[in-house]
Amino acid sequence: MSDNRNMFLAILLSIVVLFGWAAVSERFFPTPKSNAPVSAAQKPDGAAPIADAPTMLRDRAAVIAEGARVAIRTPALSGSINLAGARIDDLLLLRHDETLKKDSANVRLFSPSGTQGAYFAEFGWTGSAGLPTAETRWTASAPTLTPEQPVTLSWTNAAGQTFLIALSVDKDYLFTAKQSIVNKGGQALVARPYGLVARVGTGPDKSTFNAHTGPIGVFGGKTDYDNNYEDIDEAPDRQIDFSSKGGWIGFTDKYWLSALIPANDTTFDANFRGGGDQRYQAGVRGEPIAVGPGQTAATTTRLFAGAKEVDVLDRYQDGLGVVRLGSAIDWGWFEVIAKPIFHLLDWLFEKTGNLGVAIIGLTILIRFVLFPIANKQYASMAKMRQVQPKMKALQERYKDDKLKLQQEMMELYKTEKVNPLAGCLPILLQIPIFYALYKTLFLVIDMRHQPFYLWIKDLSAPDPLTPVNLFGLLPFTPPPYIGIGVLPILLGITMWLQQKLNPQPLDEIQQKVFAILPWMFMIIMAPFAAGLQLYWTVNNIISIAQQWVLIRKHPAPAPEPAKAK
Image (cartoon, rainbow, N blue to C red; front, side, top):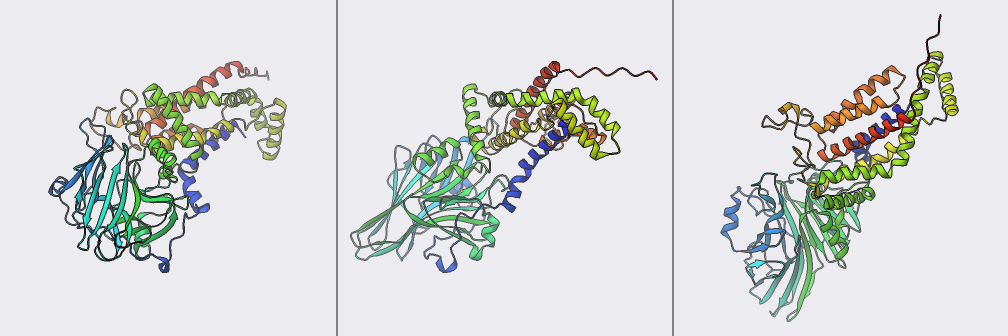
């Protein structure tokens, strides 16, 4: 078996890992359900109300301007809280823009009901009569919520029972809602606190085999990636219920997350609900609270509403004990490799100030670590080139006896001390690294909209410069499979050069397959992030240099002179 064949199989295996492993693993090795849904008989009463149905879409600015609101101002967030219903329904992410254009608007996470992409969070109580509703007009203790200035919303019913929602926010994306009941009336009150996140539509990103979006949560210490919007629609009563001590529930997009986080030491009920017309809701409910006359009761729930920045998620997970909040980023099976690769790349990015330079530095570091193994690989290839004339002679001699040919080839390998499998190991070691970098560039927002040099303005997007649009002279960007960019072309060329340095397969069919392989990979890699294309191209260039040096140390023997007839 030639070294080229081994490399071919290893590369095919890498494609399987990238495109098929997650799908195959979910079919044959499914992740255990994080928590079995609660049966109908177990469903707790007093469920939080489903979000209101969308009406005719209205202008967002007009909706925001027409009601009393509390402004939200933090280094990371801007928006407002609607005092009708105590809804956080207006939220912009100040660190992130929609596009690369200079005049691009900030990414909008929350939007009021009745507007395009309605999406909001709400806190309240269910249970007996006299509780605040979605129409309740709350009173605010201050006009603006900032990290330095909390705001308390209050409302008192006719029975003299006061409901309070004390809201605070940090400098990133975490709100804290302390819900209190102060019973100054003459009657006891039983209420169940809830929090919900509701949205209309399924968001900008579709769930795929390698990146979960949609309903998500952590129950019983395990992350639930199993439920999608379709599962909510098809569930009995359009509801999927969970019970857990510690954890969270919400909705995730590729880069954004809204999640309700009850206190770590409390047991809570949670559910995903659907109301038709693509209305979805994630909610948490605390235990029922009995508040007698003259008594006070309180419960606290946190709300994460923002970008899935790795360091921020990890800080909340480690510092506040939020169970597996970092798993909101679907790292997949190779998380144990993907996260260290991200942190190393992030460190290099911090030191160099350019993500492309950091990717090149990461490539060099990985090649340095794998140098001893790769050296053996290329030494083996050089030896394979030296014995290739003998292999060809054996092929001619035993062309009609495949079994004998294999036996003689194995004897030749043994005599010449050549290991035809030596070339596989470095490539196999590269697969999880390649996949980890792919996940980092595909999912991690820290890499979004980061430029390299010249025409590469976003290393998390495909290379936009292609011959189809005359390398940017024509004002359009063709689909990647049609418009193959400069980096994928360089990737194909460097793969072709690598092949020329490798011992050529003796079989003609294999020769034709290998002749096509670089250009096939050029097309396959065209839709991938430019950062991934850069990594592979630089890796190929280093490999070519290393192979060239070793080939000079182990030159192929001169062809034997033709024998006189």
